[in-house]
Image (cartoon, rainbow, N blue to C red; front, top):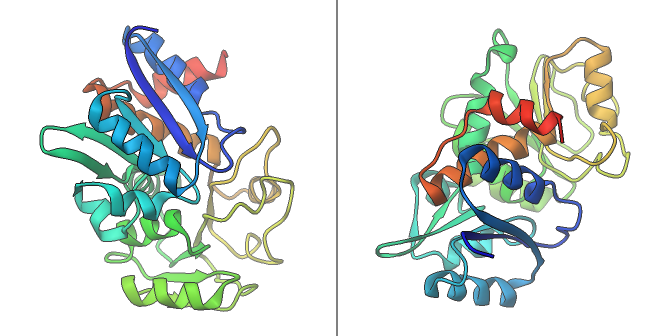
Length: 260
């Protein structure tokens, strides 16, 4: 196929809505291209980056569990990516492959959105992977951040890097903006008891064909929310702009996706 060639690498990737979102981005921008999902390990990522350098690919997205590996492979890191040590977007540039964290910029956009106005309590992040690093790199300098993960040692290492405060898995943080960066909810699981009930708002990254229990609970309680579909859409917009130089407004894209 003529036009741009993009791909998402990670494991799992079969559930991803990224190809659908980019198909609509191509339509709205008037550009031609294709977006594929590739189930990949570290070796496959390294090979794909070589193909990006040689022009086989025009841009790559990276998801779990390869975001840290992508940061190590990139020749140049954008500020957010360098701070987080996490890369989800790879761009071929004049002086090599650039690594970006459109996760980080998307978190900043969402937290600043008017629906979350008035939430001046702490941010409570669940998880300790690449997406968590992007949250902390984006927010920890300006907000008080609590962090909980089932892997306590990993959470403590992450907290030391970014100045967050570790709490135990299962703890609750009153009046917080909860950001769930774990896969919990993708298969219908609920977050630990009380986390949503005492929160002031929720950004929930997992998504599937059904609304996650955490989003359902937050909506029932009247809390402002942003779900994984919205997060992915905003992240995809930012990646597309880096690769093509073309920006498509969120409202326009969101409305078009609802018709798909």
